[in-house]
Amino acid sequence: MKNIIIDTDMGVDDIIAISLLLNNPAINIKAISTVRGVADLDRGTNNLARLLTFVGKTDLPIYNEIVIMGGAVFKPGNIPPDFLYEYNIALDPVAAKTVFSSNLPITLVATDTTKQAPAANKQFLKQVLSTKPRTRKGKIIKSIIVNNRRDFIDFYDPLAAAVLAKSSIITGTKKIKLSVTRNGQTNGQLNNKGNINLVTKINRLAFYRLLVSSI
Image 1 (cartoon, rainbow, N blue to C red):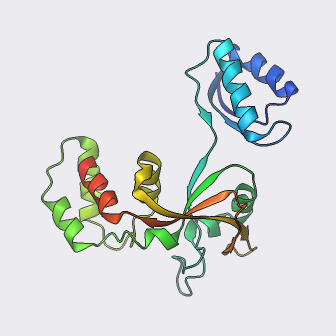
Image 2 (tube, helix red, strand yellow):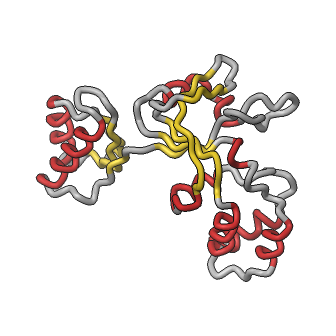
């Protein structure tokens, strides 16, 4: 059986293609993402939901949004010695450019924001040390945080995950468009029509509380 993810603009030909795959025993559709094209994003997503409801596949997740940890927009990145770039974007600037230039709504947690959540915050570490893990997952989280020897200076991916899990952690955003240079540096230009929602400010205490509670 093939596991696949479908990306669609929900044109009429897409509806046929998706319908062919939905009940094929050799195909396991894990999720469907929508993008603007023949149909705009809202209408396409609505039509996809109607199709899945009609054929009894309401448990299949539809994805309208991308949450990204990456980029250095207005502040330094995290790659020495000049700190011009952020690691994830520098690894594959071509892929980053493709994603950033798409019309999908994107929530971006860049190094600008992760600097607000340093991994070595003394009060936070004190709470972690005094918290007894309740699960194996909690043991892993506590062990990594306590034994961190500058493997990560700020909470990068954990902050992106927290933003996805609890959006109230976000207290400030800016709509922007992004371009990616050939050497991987990201440059932000403010644009009210931008598809990227840059997280500019977070409730750091709420984020730390969420991490502690996960232990």
